[in-house]
Length: 220
Image (cartoon, rainbow, N blue to C red; front, top):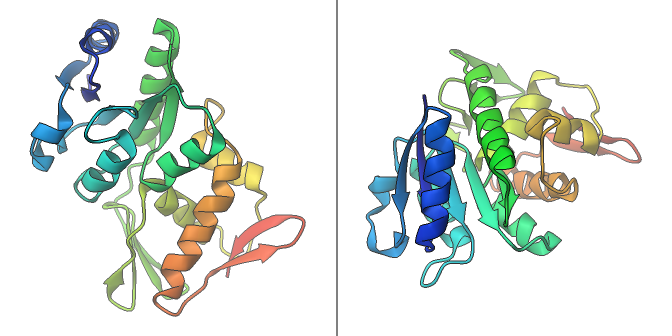
């Protein structure tokens, strides 16, 4: 059983989500007016479903606000399938999205896939790679005694490339590692994630990810 939070301004959607996921044995809390709730109310969950188009506070902005205190997967619920909107969602700290209207089977399968992946990714060690300290338990990366402010997917890309230092991976290979075969994100988001990772690293005067033209990326 997982503790799941669903955030949507439509009460009917919240009831539907609650019924579907409770049938799978999960405990589901709901929030209909996130702008009126303290940020710490979003902490402590195993997964969060977050609607994008909400009045007063959209899902992308809310995701960015709560991501520093939330380490679980965040899945957007959205009718917006344009690439710009999807990229914005992932760079704000989201992990995946589910398009509305969604089926009972799709919601159940995607939520449970992310929960299974989270359980597989538990680590209990630290490792120094190219001067970067990877804290796999807390999913953090430090350089020069300073923490890199990475989103969840940015961290996953860094950890994957760093643990395979010197090997070159295509964008599709990185995508499969981050999202798995059940991924619903656009492949172009990997390029955007690499760009933002590099920008954050360069703030600390380091640039570990190299482009291998025509092939992909590697960690040096």
